[in-house]
Image 1 (tube, rainbow, N blue to C red):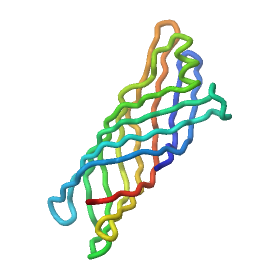
Image 2: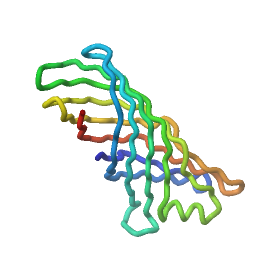
Image 3: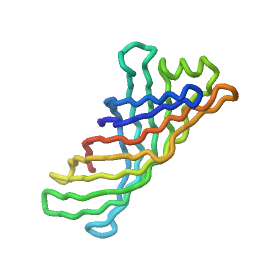
Length: 173
């Protein structure tokens, strides 16, 4: 579970920019490989969903985002004991963002194409492991490239997930 710190939707036709904050929820699953006691890699898939509202909670101001992402992170452990370990990670997130809701419908009804599309980000964070199986991570995903849609005569809409901050629980088999 995490907070989508800022999703930005901008339309060149109106010059409008909307910023959103929301609570997201999702699942993460993957595998990690350690080459030494402190250096490793992990690959995982992440799916998360959230709904943003612009000013009020009416359907016309709703902006939903479903993210499906493949991630690869470099892992480094800086503290390791029998019961607890702590470290940091950095990596890349490649995915697809699916946007819908009343706000997106308003733009598509004007003739703009669906703004869903490719999404690229950078993962940074801190991680802990305790009791050999349970972990807590503080994650920051910085958006690098977002989806855009262009229609002749109307303009261009770009959706960028500027940053996502999350706290997540992990279970390690």
